[in-house]
Each structure stands twice: as C-alpha cells, then as structure tokens.
Image (tube, rainbow, N blue to C red; front, side, top):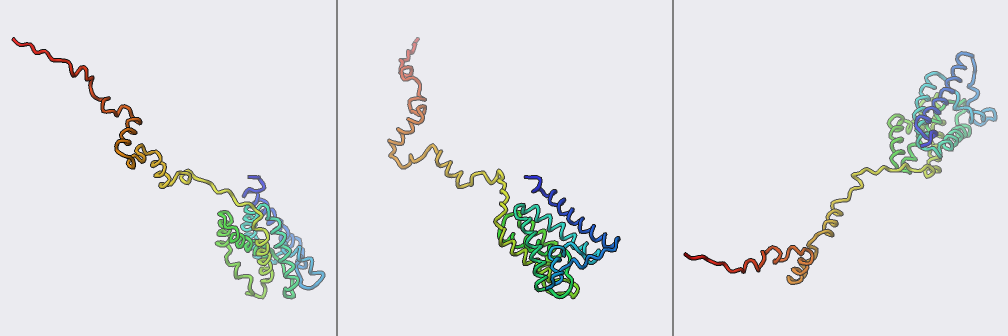
Length: 256
C-alpha cells in the first residue's frame, strides 16, 4: 500500500485541514476579524464568493467543534477508503453544496463545514450500497453509527441552522456516489487455509478414484480373480503353500 493511501496519511491530511479551520476561528476571536461576509449570500454577486469560502467560516466555538468531529471521521474515511475518487468527491460536494445554497437558499449568510460533512456522509452511505465490498460497508457502518442523524437534518428544523447547506451537500454526495462508485478498485479478499481445503464431496470422489477394488464387482468371478492375481502376485494360492516336493517325500518308519 502506498503511503498516500494509508489510514495514518488520511488522518494527517484531514487534521491539517481541520487545524486550518481552527486558526481562522481563533483569528476571528483574538484579532477581531469579521469573516461572516465570506459566507454564501443567495442570489447576489458579492455572495457568490461564499460558494468557495463558506465552508471555512464558522459562527461559534460550538459550531466549529461539532463540524470538526464530523470532518475528522468522515474525511479520514473518504481519503482512506477511496484514493482515486476522493478529491473529485470533495470538489463536487464543495461546489454543489455552495451553489445550491446560492441559487435556492434563504436570504441570509450561510457558512460552515456542515455542507461538507453531510456530503461526505451521503457519499459513504450510497457508495457502499453500490459497491457492496467489505471495506465500503465497514466505513459506512462507522459513519452511520456516529452520524446517522444526518439523514434527517437535510430537512428544516431550526431557523438559525442552514438546512439548505445540509440538503445540497447530501445531493452532492449522492451525485458523487453515482459517478465514482466504480473508480476505486475493491480490496483483494484474503483466502484462508480452511477455504482452500477440498470439500467432503470432493474427498469422496478422490477416494473412489483411488479405490483398489474399482469395478471388479461388475466383472465375472474368473476375470476378477485373474485381475487380482495380476495386481498382487503374492495373493496366488500357491505362494503361501510349502514346497510340494518336500511334502511328498516318503517317511521311513523304523521298527524294532
């Protein structure tokens, strides 16, 4: 396995991205930056920049903390499990989520990485249904166990939460799964020693092939006896008898 395809490398790359998000948030808090205008504002030219920058901005420490957990788990799963399609998936989810919000979102600034996390979750979920290999199913089960509620957060819940980002992020993940589910090779399945052993029926067939009796029962008794003698000369009825000449020697009895 290449180093770039290892789990450790996937976690490292994801951690660097999450660390960058935290630096931006700390810059807002400590240096007084106001980055909210870098979010998506629907149907405006100035708000279109948020299609590219919106996922980098967060409203609070609680907001970025929640998204950081999702990014670490789901992002690492994507980078590790799908080395050929991973960057295409990230790009499509990033653009589709932001563009969908810009076209159909409510008139407000939309920002945060929740569009990415929902897109990654939906991709891991649907691509496992299409591929059905052990690795994709295992990654999906981890994602579903920790973030299964994302299936419901694509619908409106609270006024201050951008369900539009969730919804279009999920759509981006589904589209990516439809496009790229064949791109990544499936992992080779290991063969264990017990799987290589012949089955009982095969063993019986081998034993029948090696049976010394064979089909002698189908032959006449005379032919079977001749065949037995050819196969085992020592089985001759004369082989075990003593020398006939020695048995026929006359016996002299001495009488007084």
